[in-house]
Image (cartoon, rainbow over all chains, first blue to last red; front, side, top):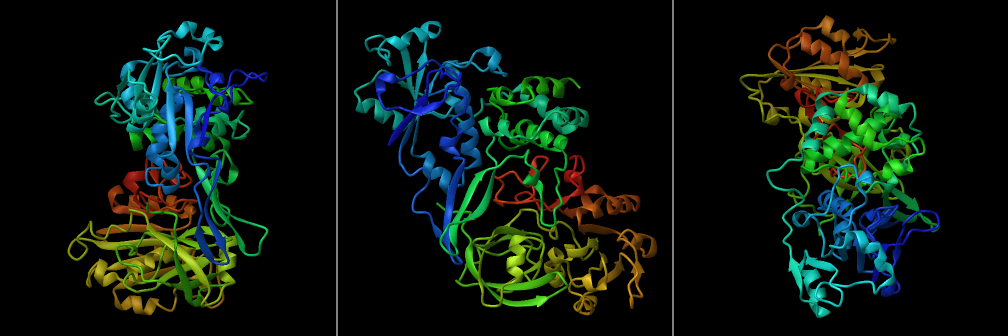
Length: 331
Length: 276
């Protein structure tokens, strides 16, 4: 069993997700960690089978081997991405085995508006559309940073009464009850989207991408993009993968594993004989944006971007998704 | 939970050479697999798995009622080179079949209303062979089928010893090769040249399988002949890893070639940039 949370700001300026060894260190300041919580759900590499000679054998356990994990202080943007993983990996036994052992303890503060392109903010009525077990709603947001010096977690009805507490699963209820905490409200998950209310911005972007293809946007960006794939690493909604057989040092043995891929990499679309369907930087850029703003909406009815802007933060040539979306809408 | 990545063990039962770089492999599962778990329609594909070399998608090309699976494979990469070096009796594994888009044989009343026109290049004949072998079953005994088939040279034509049998099924082959070749008395030029030399069957549905470069010029010809977009079907080729619509490699617009295809109607994909 292990628990993880966003760290305080490091010397490098980054907030990382770290293991919690001492509950007194619990840090809830609502800042967006540099990496999302993606790898806890869709790890960068995981074994699917072991093989020996011509036989495939099941892996003994699903990665990661420690069975249960708690993710504490997960922000609502990264929680939105979990809705996507839950859909994409619905029928994936490796994902499901891992997912049912993850406890999500969400937290209400979201990054400042300028870092959050869709201006998502916490309101109680979004909770029924987010996947979580326990949720801590901070109603003293502005002063919450001062809390670092005070005892870490004050629940409503407790000594400080700072957080309103919700549960989003039976698992969450059991845990709170186990610790004798009863002053929580339960929220029934009602699917990732609000019924009858299509997101207007999502509709507009999808329409532009599907019905008004403008190659100029991509050709222009293609002059700058160096296809490093950093944006795909930090993006919480980038989940594409490749499957490879990796030999071990033993003879005729190894592992069939899947690992994160990136549609910016040259061989992403290469087929036997060497033909590449995405044969230019412009096409690969378009593929990335189309996936998030047209294909995912078509598949699941919600946007494939949570608006965290991490991709812009890591882009070495300064491509900002916020501006690209404006271009898609305005040309 | 059912594991979609779990292939079923199979073995090679026979191998025959088709061309200098293509062999036809016949596989059988080594355990009994119930029909609900494995039966395919022409146009679907399977993932062939060689532990240590990975997996690759191939369209079965044998009769769908047989207890074996036939795959026609060109030696172009690591996995296919390995397969070409294997012998009868060697072990492999197969998962699938995949693809909801099979050839739409049930959509048309082929007996009464429609004929079938096929334009195909090179290795593209493989995914159509299941359909041709089962022609009476899928299309009816009296349905006329016309095939425009282009290959680099006469030795590159797949299944060339079967064309006589196909003729008996009312399947008419028009053949062309890219360049002049000693002993070849037939047509010369790309598949599109056949449109100038032969009359296309009236009132047809068109099925296209070929190298990506073939599609645009053939579509142009078909549109000129008045084929409706809904009556033209293409089998798309893409890189694939998962085959179940998750890994993103085979995405075409909002479709996945593995899950929604690999056969699409032109009406479905004509507005998607770079679909062909």
